[in-house]
Length: 261
Image (cartoon, rainbow, N blue to C red; front, top):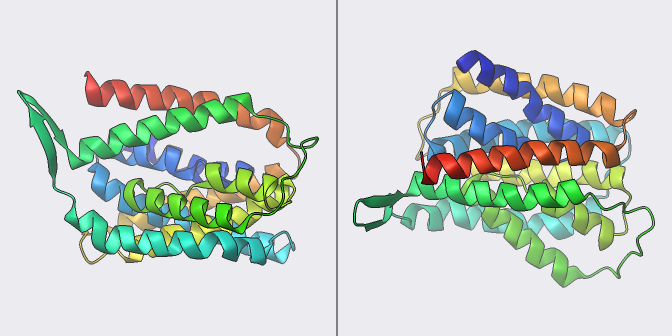
């Protein structure tokens, strides 16, 4: 099972390089179910793996002049602040056992996985629908919307470890007047900042197996290079629904496993 987990590590970076999101969607289930790491610890590991992979992709995109730093700052600063608040303060206040009803106990780890699966289901639906943005009228740039969504992404990253590309990219396209490729690369800077801030706010409370983490991250970087290369040759419009069905299936599996099996 661990070998399969390491193979799946390649797809973490592959997803980020190809469509700008979905890294944590693969990382967290892989770490929890194949490597058998506790969900709360998997969240911390995911932030490092996704953060480093996104950072390297962002560097490459900056070199190719595909990054809009103004939009990255409008979205990134509120999200970084909320990640910091979530990991340094709110997360430490949450109990390990949320509640117990008769023989049914909801732990913090179980809650993380259920919430994660629900998020996956909502993300998968938007990916499967995959609306073509080429002919859509662009809305007027709204700073308040950027700030609110930035805060939302930050808290989501801080609690369940997802980078938030599924929220960042549509906002950059529809409100930030960006094309798909620029939005994907710009989102990598935001994902990298959120994830790495979240990770470094957590290392004082989490024991880190650096040997494992570096190996897994290296595989993610390998996948990232493949994804970035293919992103120049493949259509995001055709690929997102395929990945969406994968996310939907994984989300249903996690939900059933945590609530029933």
